[in-house]
Image (cartoon, rainbow, N blue to C red):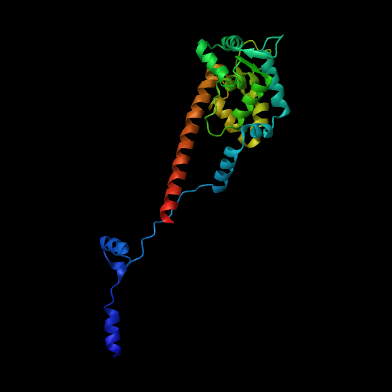
Length: 249
């Protein structure tokens, strides 16, 4: 009797040894459990994603109210606003921007300058007030998507670095140090300087490197392209993660 049991036990079909095609067939018939799909081995910061969702749902007015502008930043913003506007008014317009761009060695078309103002002109009156100017700066500094229009912001940022008495409109590493430190802290200071000035902080003759607005914009655009690629890769990984999670559940 024991020999018969052993024989039966020895002849028992091991389902795990079946070919994959038969496994799938038996799984569909309910004889075998459906194979579990392994979860994607992708590092996704869930807390960060929740935070981004909360920020997205928060009204823009509430977001802007919570943005802190340090005293040194505000001082430089006020300086730039005064540089752009005429003395007897509290706004600047297309002609003022065109004049400043020409000082910086850049000539844009009327439609291009119109677009720069349109990005920040909330009431569409063709003028940029102090409130609109400040809101523009806040929106651009908190933007993590790369979708916020920044044409005027980049010009303003360059002018914030530029000393007001400098006739040759170029900036050096020293000009940027205070603002970069205030905004990004010591930990990110070196990477921010590198993003603006590149590998070399000195010119070929050993003098401190000075860059024009056009050179500054080249570096800004290079960085924007790199950040866009990183965001795209991050979105791809998140999509793959949730796709695997859904299929595995």
